[in-house]
Image 1 (cartoon, rainbow over the protein chains, first blue to last red):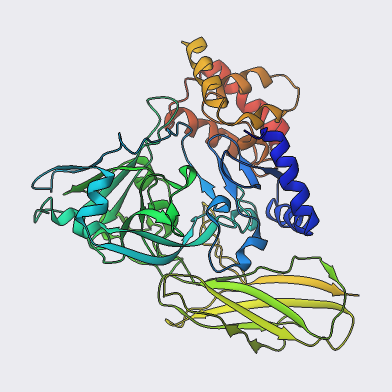
Image 2 (cartoon, each protein chain N blue to C red; image 1 turned 180 degrees about the vertical axis):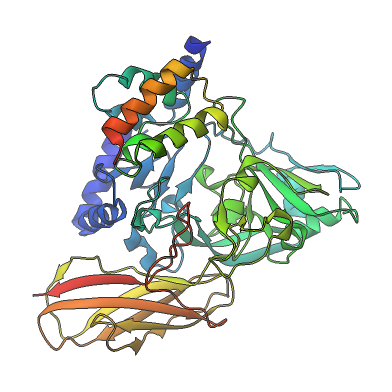
Length: 401
Length: 91
């Protein structure tokens, strides 16, 4: 086995060989608005070198330059946990329990049964942490100070949750579907990470129990052997190491629904979750329209060339991206970027724009995505107490020399 | 009980060794912070949130750790921990 420290050193030297490390460091620094800590590059076992936010529980983000590919490599896919006890699940011992007070016949399924007894489905979908870019909010918001890398696009293969639940018989009283994974807190008393979905979302044809991403089994750190995929909704519902699905007749009232991952109702145009709403607050649900420039870094100086390319990705909750506009003069004039291959409405959409620089010096680059619903990105992020849904347009200044 | 908890925390640390390199500021209260907070999480949760919260903010965080997450921190240690965080990692 390669010594861990040696591996990281190697990974770092490979990255710097491609000019990647400086990009890494800059994007990491840009992310850490209020923090004194400099960027730490580290690799979890069987993962590549990523930007470490916290060691335990592990929270690691993907360096933005890897988002130039349509699908994010499994070994560089972001890692996000709330609790530190994360057992390595053995396939032979793993069981998925279907139950709850609104289920007629509780079931226990092996991975083999899930694979064999239900129709396989594959969906390309973006997995995006609710708090991605929290570190860019001003004033800063406490929490994991994510930069732009707590997301990744993958092809998820599995079976429909609705097909699995049909075998257990859903009763008329069903209201929500709660989800639990194998991870837990160090102390027994710490609230287990349990989430719930409205029944209709759980039964949506795009909601999957996935065992594969990008043609391979899920990596341990991304939910092996099975996780939930809720295309269009933020990753907080995409339960990793899924062990229990309960169909219930009352609103689930655990900490991670009732208190955490909530947004002010009036601030965002959001998918509803009526059984979990109060007069003023609701759970975060759908992603908002957003985009990211992936090949340039704020403050970068580049050698002038006859033509320059600006590349990036854009996404929303599943309406699909209608257009991405790019400005190179701080928003005075705008150009249509070219949208690349469409992998489906839940995938992010790659885009690029080529421009011919007319002068040396400063270029203020902005990208702005608009979805098929007509929604587009605001100039400033919408403030909210937990720093979710940062979807302000990026403003990057580069120098051509 | 505390020894058991510390043992538990070292067990969890073993999975992600890099956290031993996180150095908190060497000021009064550090022992209580390391002893209590690191039971459940690495100390970069603190350094990552440097200068983001004022005293009231850190107090809220410590209250959450005790009342929601179940951190077994008594009142005396609680005050020491809040003081340490506010003075060394507050805004």
